[in-house]
Length: 366
Image (cartoon, rainbow, N blue to C red; front, top):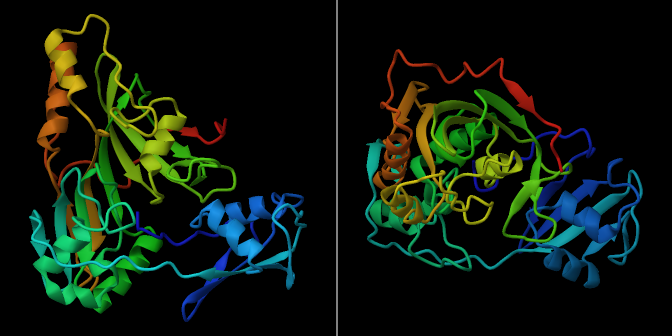
């Protein structure tokens, strides 16, 4: 879930792309694996370095910043198995981040970590399209000392309109250990997702995710993407919608949204991945009004479990589904004449690690 999650080992790219910081440049290196042999250089670059746009990679190629086996090449030139690619990437100008008095709902706080409940509509950190008004601005106002940490201690992210639990580091030691724990998949994250259509009882989605080949703001299931695993279980069926409990094994950008869309059960309200309005047959005017009034993806980070980065103590945090999403679920439950209950964390409740024995989805790469 981090903003730049560590790329996991992938036998299709040997070795995987690595980078080294050089003053205002970053040296990127990778070796062409069998699945990219014979591809155009620009296509191989896009697959191996998905954090950079095609236009930037092509510009660097034209400027002589890209070499294949030590020699400059053209974007249309083909690459071969074992070719070594080297890119002298120009560092992007950092967006300045100033403290701003934005309210935070703090769930827990000590000298090393801060746990909060992120509302919908709050971008996590500044970028070209969102220079201020972000969680990072709010954190710097809440604790000015966070200026000493990368991105004010933010170690993972939630999408702008996804709500729920986040953990932030407040010390250098906590920052390093949280980053390492997330990379090692030791931080457990549980979500609630309302999806379109009727889902099976549960399953595991094992499909790699990478940048969309033509739309850079989107992610997509891509054979050359990073390994991505999502577990889900049905909490309640409604007429035309399903409420899911979702566990992330990996933390890719838009992972739940992409995986559910790939199964043709997009997250309800998702404006990017197809969760458009679908009304149950014979829906009442009240239900229609509620569904039409919900303008974001119905996705909530319900629970977070981690070992405290300093003490090692296991800590669990939970926050309730926000009112706007709960209103939608309540309306769907009333329409289907079902009763649903989603309690806060219960020590006797099902453990995070009991998702097994479900259907697996791993071949639907169309």
